[in-house]
Image 1 (tube, rainbow, N blue to C red):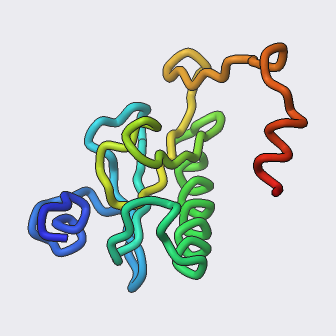
Image 2: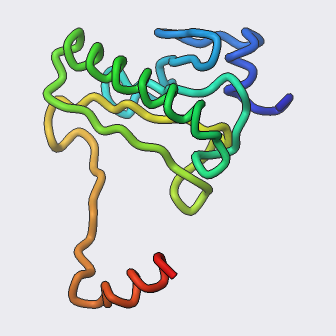
Length: 133
């Protein structure tokens, strides 16, 4: 896509700190550096999000995510890592080219990813039936 910033990085139209590249995907440092070493892994073919990417490409991207996450933890002395992807604006997606964030963690307070417990207000049977019917 001509207006996609990630496609422009893939096509070398704009610079990126590329830490990995093969025929199918690329990984580069996120400009925001939400944590030290924050890296994005993307397929070279444009897909809007994880809901659109084909299974073969997704499997390859995730293999690279795993390898890079291990490398980042080891080389940057991180204590852990968050791996996530956002789909659509409501979930925080700002670049509509499928990508996976690798967020190295050094302490639990540097980045907040919080889950709210709604167990008292959600009927799991109802949710289960909706998903599985």
